[in-house]
Length: 283
Image 1 (cartoon, one colour):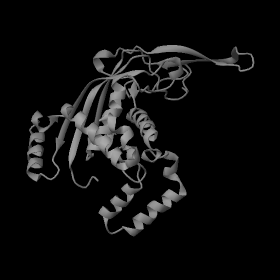
Image 2 (cartoon, rainbow, N blue to C red):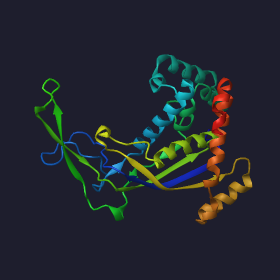
Image 3 (cartoon, rainbow, N blue to C red):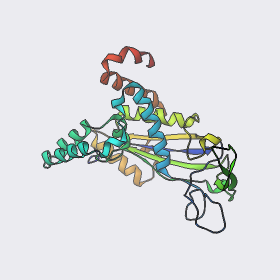
């Protein structure tokens, strides 16, 4: 899937905390400080791991596709089952001299979500950088909040169970950067649906969600797109423009969003002909 460059989608934007955010670094071992600090970078600034963003996005898309057909989003627990591992080993042995046939065989046992986000036997097409806080908006303003464990018998605070935890305040902006390479149109349509969920505050991040924490919103999403598949001359032009830092190396992908979404619906209809009538109205 990656031996030949075909296309690239670059995504940038601002992920802003609508409510306070807590992505915990685990219990602190320091004698002074918060019991449960948030994850920080080397300079002590808050950080949202790219894996946290990607995992939340994947989980939401899996729930959508399972609502259509469970086979579209396999249970990750099956990825490490002995039966699946034996199947992958058999394919590798059978096609050890033909990478193309091996790739096709592995794709054949890969669910739709994993084709975009990756699995133990197929690399992800979607890469998300760790989200760093915008320097101009950060002044070290962490908040400390108190928590307490409740005794289930007395329904009161349990003795000795008081703790505090750290949160990043609401309104904190983080830099969002991601890249998708060699994706099919329907896979890009799936990604557009997921990103729209972040744009509309539908996917929370981190812990403490029952307390109202973790609501985020993706703002100012910009998409730069290049498709060079089957056009070596255009690929040469693209590479030359990259070296010259020419912005025309890419085109704005905003106009493709609807087309990619239509390709996703078309793909799902083809995979599920018995339910085509049920989802035809989405087009």
